[in-house]
Every structure is written in structure tokens, then in C-alpha cells.
Length: 198
Image (cartoon, rainbow, N blue to C red):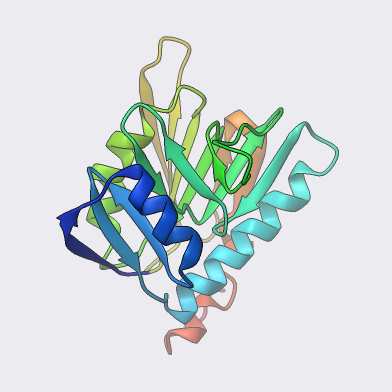
């Protein structure tokens, strides 16, 4: 999914008013509005697949998964984003009575695109780290079987683990889920007109 920044500076009130009336989605980072354009077939496949795989594992647990339709706010910085997948363990806290902006994600998942990878790894993650509730940040590559997991430990320090290759199984510890890369990436390369991952 690609982003196109605006040049004007937006307040949170202006952003929410426009966002709630628009058919388009926008992130708001440092007062800059980023229009979210459509993603590729591979991006859509991976987003649907990770949502399904994690959603099934969360059944019967105190955690719930939410699609990219739910906006997330980083209160410390005033940032609003639409992660590809959000997970909350316990009660979901929302910004206001509209119930469309989540404040306390436990885990966030982003499927990387060439146009957003630097943004997702850099500015966006800087803001996400200010979420006191966040324990895991998961990045999924479109180009090859690679899942990267950033986890916050007891001392508030972030650790990094890369899971690469179709035989790998990524662990998302805060929500007690695992992602078999064979299942996650099944047929994804075929959609990109490349050989499918076995």
C-alpha cells in the first residue's frame, strides 16, 4: 500500500472530521496527512492470510484481532494510523464514543510495500514505540518469506528476531501466536507471476 503525503499541517480535530466523512483512509503523522492508496494482490493476500491465521489462534483467548478498518492513535504523539492488523488483549480502549480509534493495541502487524517499507520501519515505528500497551510489532515482507518481530521486554527494551524461509515459524509472544511461513506465503508469489513457494 503506497502513501502520498500532503503539504499542509493538520490538527487532530481537522483530521478526524475529514477522515470520518471520507471514503479514503489517511494516516496522520507529525501533522502530515498521508493518503493510503490501494495495495497489490500480494499485499491483499498476505493481509487476509495473517488476519485469518492469527484470528483462529486467538479464539478462546482474552485477545481480539482487528482489521485495517480500525484506526490506531498514539496519544503521546497525536499520530493516527491504519495498521494492517491490530490485536488487543483485554478490553479495547477507544478514543471517543465513535469507537473507531483504538488506543491500546498489544500487537501491530504491517505488510511491507516498496513504497511504505522505510516509513513502516522508521517514522511509524518510532511513534508506535510510544504506545505503552504495545508489546509486539510485526513486519511481513511481500517479496520473500520473511517475518520480522520486534518485541518489548520487561525492561522496556526492544528485541528483534527475523524468521526467514518457507520452513520458518515466526513467534509473536505477547499474543501467544505463531505464523508458519509456508502457510502465510502459500501461493503469494504466484499472484506476482513468480513461482509459488513450495
